Image 1 (cartoon, rainbow, N blue to C red):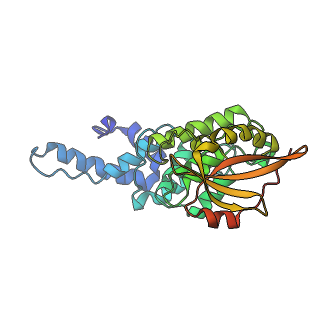
Image 2 (cartoon, rainbow, N blue to C red):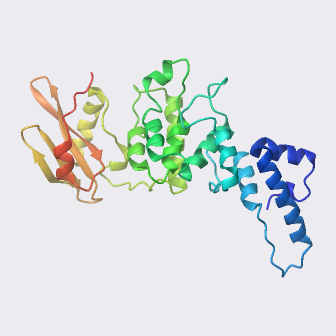
Length: 290
């Protein structure tokens, strides 16, 4: 139970009204009356507290982002209010300040956690959270809230997003933005939204597909070092593509190549699949920018 609800004054009720709206504050007020009655009842008597769910939402929306407490379920009568607090969908700019407030980001996170946003909407927002236009377009921002919503949504593949955004690619965006992304990924692992790192010697959890030729060259040295750990699973000789499986952790790697003077330079990058032959049949050789 929250201490300031023991004897709510006008300031407390105003606080609840600002978070939940008039309807939510009224519901919370009913809960206060019932909680007071429960406290006066004998300790062995049932002590129903129907406003506990409202209290959990109040405290959650007053917290920090990302939250260190579990994301509470949203009572049906508060859904409209939480939607209003979210000011749109994940990644949406907020007028007039552009960046969503902490409360707006927390509201979006809760709506994503309990499937109030469709998975497709959340995934698209996360896939475009750090696009180049978001750095230069006057009405946008780096949408860390969109990534966080995707990490907690039950129907979005958070592992693939972590692989995509967890790399150390300096050319994509500044270190402050990347640092916030890494903080979100650590938070997601700490709270069980992402599986823990396997820390296998192959480094599957530490690398991502290269976005540039320079990144591919950097991967080539690591690829040579881990080849003794890998077992061939599928090979396409005509396209110079292959899929390997780590003999220790069982995760899969794809092999590709780029021109390097008089020879091809082979490199490998981690992939997530349980059908290596099917993955290879759908794959295309990289055409990486310099």
